[in-house]
Image (cartoon, rainbow, N blue to C red; front, side, top):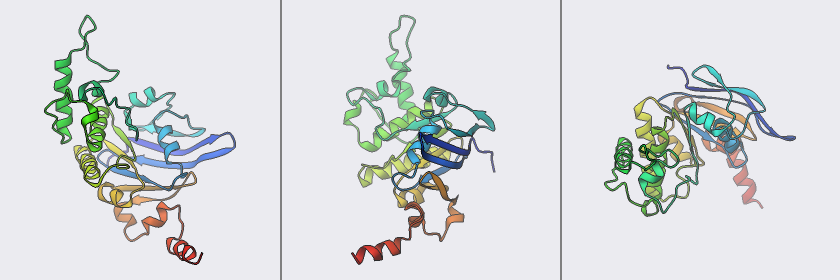
Length: 256
């Protein structure tokens, strides 16, 4: 097996006396989808913000291609090949596909004017690579479906050098058809073979459809992990719920 592009060892994150992450280990391999699952408050958001350079870990170490990495900012993480697509996507609804694709990284000529034809061409080609054909890259983002907006944000992250793509609940708040669009995009990115994907989700079915490897968090700790084959037959619902006995909870609830 190839070496992991990112390896996380014994990450601890404290906010005052509160321990948000407690000894978390994680590996992200090229060409794999690694599902990160857990209930609300499990530590998923804190972990991805730590990997994305938003939070500095209290202790522990992140390694990129075997070398220690110390992110002081999201820009440091981005420069190391960590691309994060958050739920809110940070897209401007009134601007075009191209303008959103290059937001903050516009291609300009010697006079500072944007080279729109070149930018339109690149944005169109990059979207095509992951299966979306925007014949008109001047289209306003506000006219796109939620699944198409997710694909735009993913294509943008890849174009600007992401080797690890962190997707924060990309299928939430989408209809079933749009969810399937996003899952197909994830499969296409995985098929490239050079990008590892961290897929944060509450959806057990979606994780099973696209993920190769799973890590379950509860109260800031890893309570289960393994490949799809290794977890075959295990109660993933129980792990997603922090190790709770779902059947017992349902029985107790019925008795109330």
